[in-house]
Length: 478
Length: 56
View 1 (cartoon, rainbow over the protein chains, first blue to last red):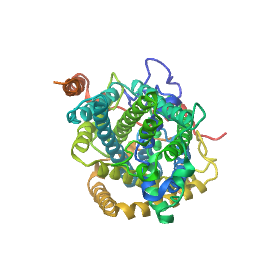
View 2 (view 1 turned 90 degrees about the vertical axis):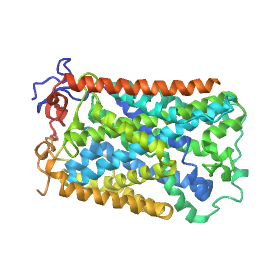
View 3 (view 1 turned 120 degrees about the vertical axis):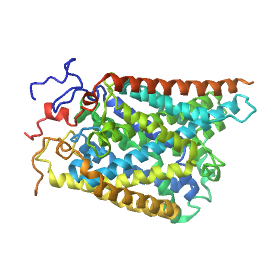
View 4 (view 1 turned 180 degrees about the vertical axis):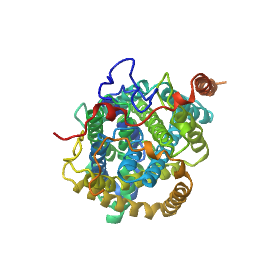
């Protein structure tokens, strides 16, 4: 197969093993960045501030940076593994090659649930934002949010259906606007451009750690919100032109962007809004950056952050559709799920059946489930996925040491990031158990039941001969 | 009726239109192409063609 020119127009998207129609390799590092940051940035606009309510502003900052360490480990580990296992499905495909089918099945489901739930939560939020805009523009009635929720999901699914390049270029533009809005808000309110309105000392006095160190622990759960989803960059692996270069570049640039955005967000909001108001994400600061812009007295900032909030929400939902459909598609292609889902559109080169199938599921959750439950299920599925990653990289390095296969990126200080990630996952599980113990137990019960179903029934249909595709040497010790 | 009522109806209509477009295209695609072609995608194309996976 070495004589096949993969850049040829006639062979584009086609390859060996009988592939006649494959996903299109058209993306670059900027699209990978847009996918990762786009999914996450909504967490800066809303959600993270519940950590302030749990333990005060300093606890939120500690949670922000601890979670930042956790996600830096995630980004580094993911960059190494996915630049080597560069296929749609991301962590699912990694688990399949490195650990085994049962782990892969579970990880695939974590991904699909985490992203589909997050997509539903984003659509609910977008519907709410439209109602806020209606009120701001003088509408006196009660806006029906349902058409806007449905429109967000169908429009973004349609965009995904029509092609990955347009989808992620759209994400690149709206994510860049949303990120720039945070920077402009910081520059405008900190005193760098014009008069500053921040007063951290006065707002923090007497409220440094209102609930002590237990509050810091409780805040950890919502600290994840600043970065949750950056691991989604791996799903673009089969559609980037140069996986070994683009995936590490886009992912690591993404986590750096998020560390800056998260710290600036905390700094701006905690310096303008009292912690009691900031920490109440239901009746207080629903969208804290927007609330900070309102207090600045500038209508231009209010509109900019308003659009920033909407764009961040749309970018997140868009990235989630992209990622959930790739994971579902990859599982279908290997017959972990019915092979029918492994189809690629011959014209648009997208996993069109997977995209369409997940639309009604997202709609059911967006229209029929409460937002906090949807978000909790998404976070818990994500957390299970993060727990898998350190085990994955330890086994990867053990079975295929650095001198045996070529990697696009080698992460430094192994196994320290893996151990740090595992420890922080343990702490976060404990924090989640304190607040959402019932949901955690119910969800683990769900995954045990589907694992039994997979082991005793579904595995007989899996395309076992075709599922291991990497031309690697035999793993060490086998 | 206020402007936002019209926007609501517009959102319903646009969502239906986009959903319908996907459905029609899906059915058209499935009936035009052989199933073997549609599900012919295999993992690891690039690796098999371009990657050596040897450390020099």
